[in-house]
Amino acid sequence: MRTTLLLLCMAYGPSLCMAQETTDRMEWHAAFSAALVNGGSGVSGQVMASAEASVSDRWSFGGSSGFDYYGFRSVPLLLDARRYFGNGSKRLFVHTSAGANIAWPTDAEKTYYTWTGEQVESRFRSGFHTEGGVGYLLTNRMGRSFFLSAAYSIKSMGQTRTETVWNGTGATEEVRESTYTFHRILLRIGYRF
Image (cartoon, rainbow, N blue to C red; front, side, top):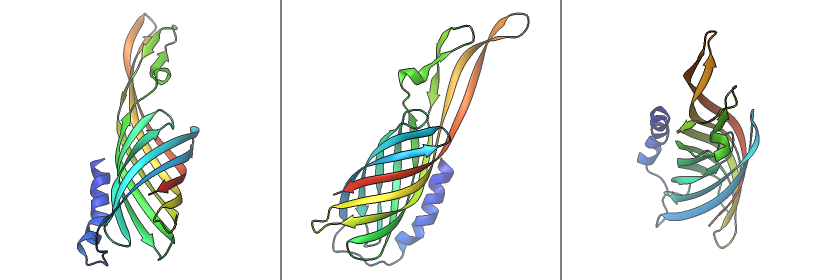
């Protein structure tokens, strides 16, 4: 995760230091969005809320959080960057996000049944969440916007559980650790105000 954040800072840091066209004041926006998430583990959903500051006519930075139900339920906490292209009410943008993915599994996701029928509760570890994509922003006269975007996302988390294993002479308990890395495509629709 540190590497991802370092790469994000290296990619966008020089742009912040260069002279840019600026507005008279910094504009703040909030947005709510819902996404359809598709990958190797099926189709699921994601809802996000974000706040961003437009530091110029072309760049905005902010943070977002929400609920991600793909694979296992989790709460991503992300830092966001957007670069807008074009002028007027219809604009294209590219965006990237990176941050922590806090594990918050449901009771059903925590429960694991061993081969003996024993019910065991597993523990989950948080991981990282990254996203990058392109989108289209449509703004009305009041400054409120609808947006559509398509993105590629990676979400990771870990799971630890104790399992009873038959080794040929008797049953012993072993700790099993699994690390999940989900690669998926997101189609997002949202409203920014």
